[in-house]
Image (cartoon, rainbow, N blue to C red):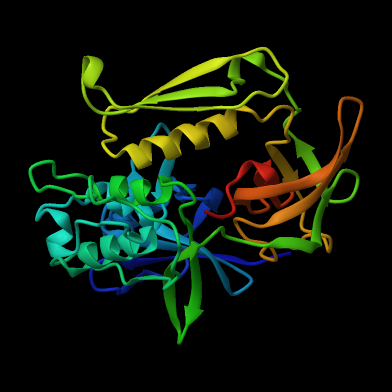
Amino acid sequence: MHSYRYLTCDAVNGTVLAWDLPLTDVTYGPELNGPGGMQATLEPHLAHVLGSMVDPGNTLIFAERDSKLMWGGLIWRAEPEGGKYPIEAAGFGSYLNKRHDLHGNLDGRAPYTYGDPCKVIGDVWAYCQAQPDGNLDVVVDSTTSKATIGTPQEPYASTWWESRSLADIVADAVGVFGGPEWTEQVAWVGGQPERRIRLGWPRLGSRRTDVSFTSGVNIANLIPVTYDGDTYAQVVVALGSGEGQARRRATDAVRDGRLRLEDVLDLPTVKGQDQLAAKARTGRIARQNRGSIEQVDIIDHPAARFGSFQVGDDVWVQVHDEWTDYDGWARVTGWTLTPAQGDQQERMTVSLAPADSFIYGG
């Protein structure tokens, strides 16, 4: 039986509020290019601890499994529903949705001309945490890339009168052609919970030959493979800022021997032509995927121990049942861990994408 513990801390001064918050119905996990999340339930008779141990919008929460930190984030909601007291949290990146570029150009860090999007992400966090009462002690990897954002004709800027959310700026940096990827990671460092933004270029993760997901071995359940023509397209048009004939447009198309199908992306806030072209290409690649395995439930097994693989890794997947015969590489784009409770066995739900559907370099 594995041991779980949930810690909460004051987001401003780091003071530990609860070393072992009593939670049930817990699920949590990270994701690729996103903050991930947590859902849990506080026992109703313990609702009186909310003021001292759980303060939504001001409390960090960490999930520990067998003395190893697995996930961390910010509590955003704690509200009674009937006889339950559910708690909702999201990773540290969710904080950027509540912060804005109030100075413009990240207080002098921008604009960017052929800027490294990794630097943009680092600058966003530096600006965020430099403001009073805004420091979450998040460390950003020093990764660099050969991708670029902004051109001499269209420098990438963020004006104070737009007051853009910092999360949007990070999304722009990730969205450029061949841009970096990010996820979150926590670990005990010197007795303190370190929170880190992992940056990867040309991609996060690696191809894992020591980890596999196999039906009859460690796959307990999976979402059936579907083939849906409504979601398929090999021609994608991205429409950006502007109106009428002045509206920006980028098209990404290939011929693949199939009937031509088109899709249009409405992106009115995208101003840069380079960003628009990248979104069109990413959208086209994603819409050409057919018959992929998108999610599996796995058990803790020597073939893939929980915590042994990371977001971004390629894992060999073998599924053979009455509907599916699949052998191939799939990419881990997120996972959600559900601890054992009652008769329910501990399990991990892993989100997957075709390994060849990602741009690995510029």
